[in-house]
Image (tube, rainbow, N blue to C red; front, side):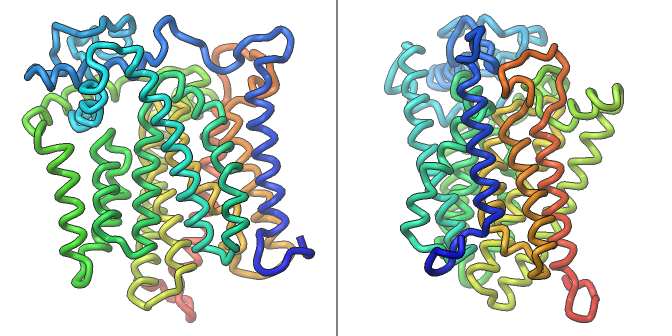
Length: 437
């Protein structure tokens, strides 16, 4: 791209972007490959079926009932036995997750079909917001002119919203896009010097399904310093008051329900966790693999957090702050995906924004400015993005390959974590080789 004026993306960034767009387009268009038919999503009888428990739970809250033991469901759940019904549990998420859907219930009443449509269009709005956050964080990481950021935004939205995992989430009515928007909105707010907004969004992300807990803890630790403590406390407090305080008495029930959720393991293509990767490759070491990967991801996140704290203390540049916060956020959000025995494909939206920022701004990751180093990094990130977007190479090209398939997203996430680990270990070494904390 030598003909461009001013700073731009590297040729490896463009290569990865085009490769990612190609696999997303192929995966989406493969449903029209003869014989036609959806190659990824097996449509259930009830559209937005995963939204139904939260819809019923919000109704239960408004009626003063316990959503975890609710015998008077507004809409019967045909899939209740697969999500806790056999254990007498009617809701598996934290109560704050149900609070989020109370406004939807107040708007549509008992009309679940209308609630599903509201959720779908709200998800599209959030997708646009998330794409905007990604390109703005990229713009802080790398000096890219505003025009190029605006041009990249639709492609970023395309990659985040049309990959098979995100489409599964849209069809099921899942909320992971909300969590992702909160997390990466908090990243942008932190970098833009808005501590109240950052802390509010970070805490809100942790209260939905718990996926943002480690991310929120790290961000709040950095925000609770002398100059930003009051604003950060106000933002975090507002999130707790709105989402947790009204349902705090239900937290013990939520922990009991979590035990039911934790025991679930589905070995189909939709399970893109490290437990399923181990199940396919090692046949019997799924728990050990997920514990090991979760511990590894947590260690990488801590290393990135330490480097981020050092950059903040030393008055680092906007680019340094954006780099290390992106690395920390990506690694910390990978921890629950790695730990879960049943990490479904729509969880990918949590880490995909970070992957895109790092792929497009990969020059910031280079320790040595050489063509060999750039090529090695470019190939690694291209592989990570390709696999994180394709999920199943057979289905991406319109083929069915049986029930047990290699979860490609887990492979790509492992490659991405390896790249982050390499950068974090290099970043923790001072000029004389000593580790700086």
